[in-house]
Each structure stands twice: as structure tokens, then as C-alpha cells.
Image 1 (cartoon, helix red, strand yellow):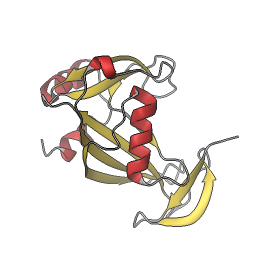
Image 2: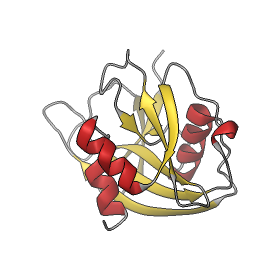
Image 3: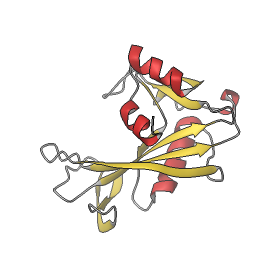
Length: 167
């Protein structure tokens, strides 16, 4: 059975409609995604390299994130995604939603909004446990290093992260 998601309107308000994740969305229907810029106290960000068998963007670098499930708000979704993908608990860390954007692709029914959080956490790579079916590598990187990765290997959501950080 497919994972169920809440459907939102253009004002990011839940409509009360709950659909399977794979269901194509109609005009005015959006699902929610979240991304997490998990930052250590040295100003480096936690980045992961996607598994090679992923259907989309296999082997590319990214930050933790994913789709919300029915019943979650944006912050609950980002906390769950970070915990699932990295083993880190960010529920009590210093956090701010720093950016949000919409995508509407009516042809494919791929309508969504993305909330990007900046989460400051006292952690090291030793605290990280990767979800093996999601990621094959992890590192801490400055934004300058992320830019180099974007230029050489690719980095998902890079331009949106620049907008979120006003870079």
C-alpha cells in the first residue's frame, strides 16, 4: 500500500484531502516536501550522497529531506526525515524555516511546496548512521565546498539553497 499524504492548497493550508503519494495532483493541489540544512557549530553542513540505485539523481550529493506523510506538519516531517536518513535527533535543536517554494507541473501532476530548514546541532560524523538504501556517503562541508561539488559532481537543490541562504 502506498504511503498517504495530506494535500494542501496554494496557501499551504491542509485541504482535508488525503491521497496516496503516487497519485497525480490536480491544479490547486500540492504535497509537502522538506529539506534540512543540518549545521554543526563550526558552520559546516551535513551532506549525503544518494544511493546509486535511486530512480532520480542517483549518486548526487544532497542534504537530508523528503516528503511529509499524512498527519505531519512541516517541522515534524523534517525531524523524521533527518532521523530516518542520518540517525540524528533534531527535534530540540536551534531551528528556523528559512525558505519555502512551490512547484506546479500539471502535465505530470507533480505539484508540491518545499520548506527548507536550517538546524544547528552539536554533532560529529560519528553520530551519523546512514540509511543504506538512501545514501552511500556522508560528510561535513562548508558552503564553499558544496559549491565545488555542485560544479564538479552535482548537488541537488543547489540554486534553492543559495536562495535560502541569500548567497
